[in-house]
Image: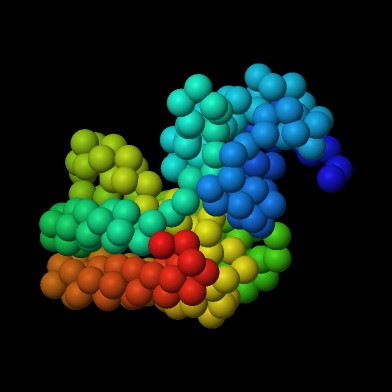
Length: 229
């Protein structure tokens, strides 16, 4: 493998983080496999310190887990865990639907941010080809939901929502979910946004339920097909 190149404001930790995440997405580092630190240093051409810092960052995202006194390994994702996280996410989004609908219908700034998010994601999903571009679609997906919670006006809720990290599953779907399914998810975001823009809390609640249930069904199908549950 060609050593990762620095660009812009990238640090060695950023480069190591993206490289390891890419290898997890492409299953170069399979779920459940112990991570060989010296091998990663050689593979990416960097020292152990940025590799360890990158692994700690990936632990926060639940892609990597620590093995007591033995190092790290790639986490296996379990459907039960995903199901519980989605249940909590839907509870929060349904609870705040009235506040979100009112806020977005009155705020041109929130409308602009949500519209930019939807436009960029739809453009990207039609052309993405690399793991990094693919993962950007899920970063935009997560950003949409965080903007939703931001519109509730509760900073505590936003912090709790981020800690759920329900988009961890995205790393396990690369190359397994048809592009059209990702497009469907963005179209469901568009439906949610229309309800927000119109200030229709009940319509928003219905769209939130639909989106979360469809997402859980798609993820469950992929994970079961690839024996990751």
